[in-house]
Image (tube, rainbow, N blue to C red; front, side):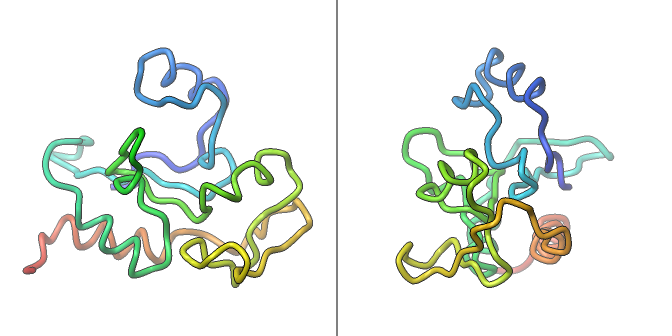
Amino acid sequence: MSFETYRSQERQAKLFVDGTTKLKNVGVHHYGLACDIVRSVDGKPSWDGDFSIIGRLAKKHGLVWGGDWKTFPDAYHVQRCRMADQKALFAGTWYPSETYDPTARAETAPIRTDPDPDPDRTLEQPISEIKTLIVEKPEE
């Protein structure tokens, strides 16, 4: 299930105090470019088990997977913004274009320079496939 997409500063602060995140200030979730995906067990979120399938599907769909992070691995997290671009995103000077590829090298990835997000660009298609595959437990 998509557990969390948009995140407010208040929620980010609570997660920081709880030790759930190392980011004190809101991150990529605040910009509609991230999603935490967990299992649904009896209709309730569950963080138990192996979430490596999210990593494989994130890479297939050109998303960044939090499970690859060295300092604070986040196996439930996918985002459409590479770490190197986050500073400009947070400053409001950049937002990814429709053709932006967060897995491409920075010097080759096209970017949009106006700070207004594209309301038609969502993570819904890759997230929908990821959710389906987690629930169905596909054969390897």
